[in-house]
Length: 364
Image 1 (cartoon, rainbow, N blue to C red):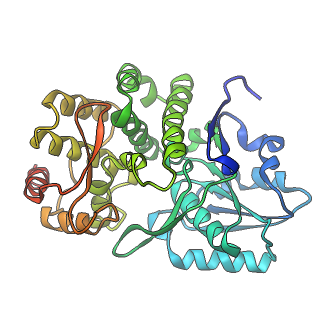
Image 2: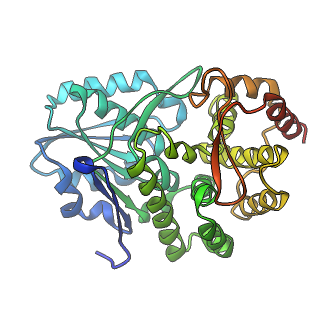
Image 3: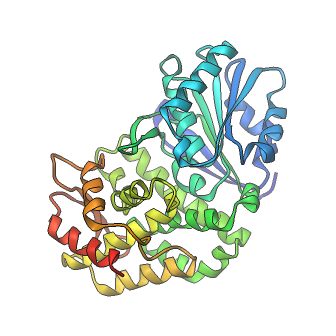
């Protein structure tokens, strides 16, 4: 294997695991096969990723009883119906409590596979093999799993940590440009929350990242994963500090839901949500205009949206934000900031200020 492989530990006692980042990891069977403890395995993937990588993964399952389960590509397929079908597939396989699910795909596949693993016999192993930048730097790390409802995104789920994460950066070569840029939103988010030096590094390397430079890419993924691993180790179930990782998410989930999960990719919605959170922070006197300007500029440099899709309405978005699971005791609880690298949890946010920010964004 290449010297460029990076390994980052998520420290959770007897549930600790390693995130491996670099080229060629899917084919490093000796590395990821160690995480399989039983004789049954099921690979969950989707109709876009499976033709590219499924055969390479299943070559590593020699000697096991295994099957694959595929869903269609897209956020709308992260559903209870598909979890039910995956559970039936596990039953057909005869999967026992030492079985392992391998999640081969992006965040939708990882969330659904993890939730399925959490449900089967009250919890079996799973391995994350993320194939999108967004999944590599965010959803594959930390054990959040779940499905969507028509009422909102990720309203049902469980904390269920993987046995290992294998982020093969070679898979990013086949990632469409829009999906790749959406992943950069989560990289920027980590820096915006709690690492000003990383934000400055991203400003210096934005063009290299946009061009998929291998060195810059592996470094950015590793720094973001290391930051998130530290937060998860200290606050696994989001009782305090981990909530900071939701900067932009309450706005972003409202944008995704209002667009029926088709108008914006998750990363695009997070990017716009971060910008709205920065504008709200500025309006509330928590941050300076220069911080908003720098965030806006960085998002634009890597090709992320800085405007809300046409036709969305402020009152609809606010109603969706009230339903978000991060809302507390009926009042808006948002992650805002006091400038780059200094995010904080703010309860009881003034809805008039939120409405003003949304109204301004929806009319431009």
